[in-house]
Image 1 (cartoon, helix red, strand yellow):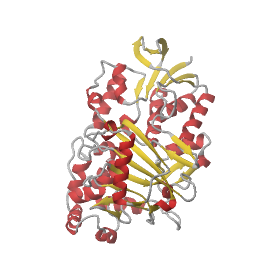
Image 2 (cartoon, one colour; image 1 turned 120 degrees about the vertical axis):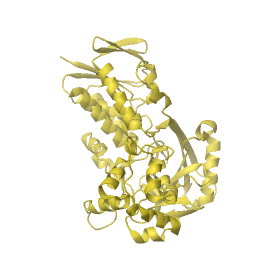
Image 3 (cartoon, helix red, strand yellow; image 1 turned 180 degrees about the vertical axis):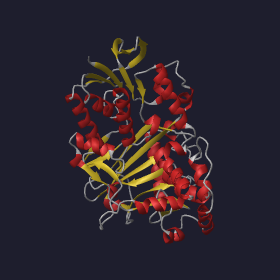
Image 4 (cartoon, helix red, strand yellow; image 1 turned 180 degrees about the horizontal axis):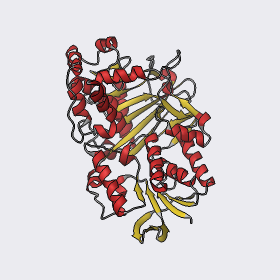
Length: 457
């Protein structure tokens, strides 16, 4: 008997779910996307020899599931690793390098930490208390801010850790759930009695790489992330998935163990449904589920500002890939990637490509300012930090409104409860995606695979 499965949303989670589901026997898969394109936030722009990401830029190489999927669909040879260089933090009105050996800001080498100008001597002594403090008692969850303040002190958190972590989740660090984002740090603290000891042990017990130039931690595709989306779309169609753009699912109704979807005014019936849309869409279909958490779960709006220059216009001899900004600095930008230094394929020879990020939790710049105003704000901040002469050859502003779900304290427990409710009241319907258990691209692929497995098993 053929099982019919509907997948709602054609972002990376929906496309990956369609791929894994289409590999099952006796399954028909329909994929519905409200817009006219696949990829969601992923979008690559190519112009005059530039390859520019307007959404996500890359993914962590150590999260191998996306690499495995890329190889499976024939794009393994297109993967490129970022060029290495020191990461910088803008704090105390200057750029300072991240201490050598630091892991997300946590020291693993003594001399670089003692000599860094990112924090004061007093803050360095305070961080040393981590060696004697007992592990923090956590009943259900704790904020990332509270955890790191307790272990390392305010200054290390605000000048080093927070700028690095907030760029990943775009959530106030004093509200960000530790157990939903970095539970491994709590595990290290528990196992070794000290966070620094735990990070040091993990780093030094990792398999050693061959001597030579350090490898970058991120992966991309030589023709941009959009090439991965395009190829994945091609493969699922070859595998028999029916892909339907400009198809809006307006209702999901359960009857006798099956689910009837109303799509563009017509009804279709399925055995299973995988929903991969942002969480604020759920209220359209599941009015009776305990949506209180999702009703109040916020998502940060961010914008990227791409600026292309002739190489001589930007005076930047630093061997680095970019910088993040401490929230103590009065800037609109939160980070800037020196893209042509990070990715060899991103810009033509002799050109400089900068990518600034705008939008902090609780701010409304992205919603309230137009593109020209956002460019002016970004350029004003960059001129404080770097030496840039003249106007760019072109700029591109991309607004990603409500695009970064905020995992606040208790998120993991709430998501577990919602999944249990769905399993009991809507068996065969799976909610998944970036709003649940990971915002990175590999996390979305992992969740798609888990969603398929939960149905097929």
